[in-house]
Picture 1 (tube, one colour):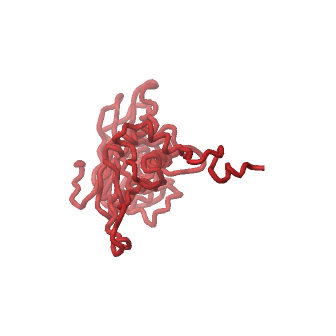
Picture 2 (tube, one colour):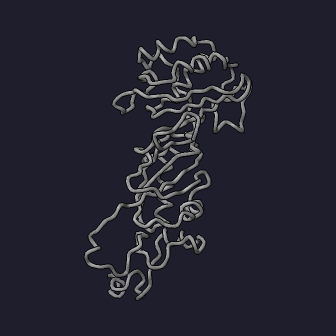
Length: 315
């Protein structure tokens, strides 16, 4: 039988002893100025000690915390929490739970796939009493794994949403066009050994700029209602035999759109597809007629744009 004293006083039967949670033990290692201050409730939300009765039902606009993340997606199943492996979202929410001593759910500007990287992923969450911004940068970086980091933090007005408020995104896809394997870039680039005709790739890319139906470049399991998207910028930089970058900016993307575009441009560079064939490919809307899906490791979410006055090429 269990000890009645233990039932009254908690584990071990010691009155007055508080058992630390994992979140509390992790935040205790942070600098004093980044720890939750004494007086916060268990969720990290600050409450006035006394407030007029008439104010207790009033709920003003709730601020939104915006974080800019950088991560190496190599060992993750992608941004979104999934049962089959570690995710970026789970790591970010775990760090936030430790800081706030309670769960926080975040929204991301884009759900990057397994193996895809980010330099400018944006996430947001509503917070009644945001912590000092240093806590979200220095504090979270002390709690996150080495391959995930918070670069910037800011407080935005109520209504801001990392995904819904975005006016565009920029992705960069990296190709290493060398004759032999390049171990130092294997995690961040697609290694294509056959020399590519970069001029032909540039010519083909011009046909994809503008507002088009990108069904031919959409993954078969994409849940989007339609594939009409506006590509504001599509550039191919670099030279054969070295590093080649494909930079794509658009108002939004369908699933695997950038990787399918890159796979098609590489076929152009290999001489297997004419640059002038892309308008017909777009018009046909047949995914099976486009190029292969480029591997994920070459793709990086570089930036997310907000506001109606975004211009191509300008962050």
